[in-house]
Length: 232
Image (tube, rainbow, N blue to C red):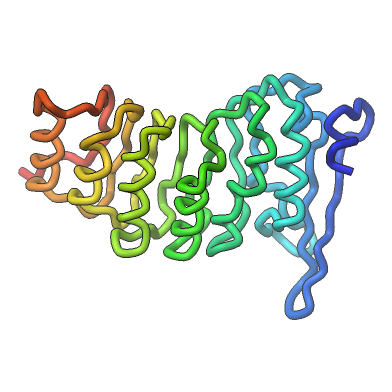
C-alpha cells in the first residue's frame, strides 16, 4: 500500500486505524500528496495527524509511522519533518521507520516535546549508533525529559562517531550536563549548531564547554551555541 501511494496522484488523505485491546483505537490521518512529494512542500508537520475530534489528539501510531517512512521514500522536495510518534520506546523507534526514506531529501527531524524520556531517548540514539537515518543533518529533541544517566553515554558515542553527519542538534530543556556535552563535541567534526538552553549546565559548565571550543586541538567546528545567560 505505502509503495503504491508513493506515486499516487489522486488520494488526498489516508486514515489508518490500529486496534488496541486495552485502550481506544489509535487513528492517524496522513496527507498522501504532501508525503509523496507531489505538493512540493519542503516542510511537513504531522504533529496533529494522530487522533480525531471524538478521541482527541493522539501520537501517530507505529503502523502509520511505517507508512510515513515508505511514502517519503519517493519525495525529493521535503527538507523538514515534524512528527509525534509518542513517548517511550514507541517514539524512540521512529528512526527505524524513517530509515525507509533514506533516499528522499529529508534532512531535518523535529521531535520536540513528544515525551521520549529515558527509554525513548535510549532507543533513538541506539538506532543512530546502529547506522540508521545517517542522512539526517538536523535533529530537534528539546523538552523530552532526556537525562545524562539514560542517554548521556549514547549521545557521546553518536557524536564521536566518524560517520556522524548531524550538523544541528537541539537538546534544550533536558537534563543534560556539561560533562556529557564536552565529551560529545570534543572529537566531533560535524556539529555546527548546538542548543543547550535550559539544560542542567551552570556557569562553570559553560566555561568548561567554552574552554574546549577555544582549544586549538579541538576538532569541533561549532559556529552557533545557544545557551542560558551567565548568572549575574
